[in-house]
Image (cartoon, rainbow, N blue to C red; front, side):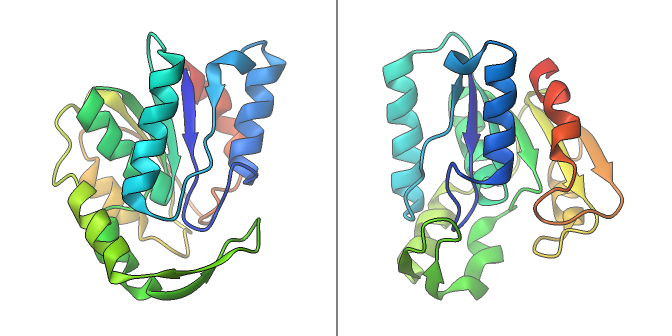
Length: 185
């Protein structure tokens, strides 16, 4: 099963989630694709993914996480032994996201909410200091990411397979070029 985890202030309607879901449908594997709507609370987000997968009981799981979803994917991969594809992932999100404290608006739904110290504490509790089995990970990063310094991910996932592209952006321009790479992984 391929499980897409969207980023901060996003939803399953994000461009990458839709591209991956449409690709899975085109190849007749829509039943093997899951993209849960993640709550704003990091702890609740992890609980939602685990509950969804407990219902489906897949034989194998590959997580595809973008930005904050990459942080969640890393936590879940370490906890459950799953594989993870990380797209411009947030590394040590509790540190990275301190500047996001305060009012937030979801890009797709328009929902407004407050990102608080409690959210940062939940992120800190989910943090993985170092990955244990780099062969479980594939990093996709672009040097032009305007939100996250790609070098942090390159260093953190140093022994994992990495595809680093010059330029691009936080949304990972040209994501569709990597759909088969993700499935092959």
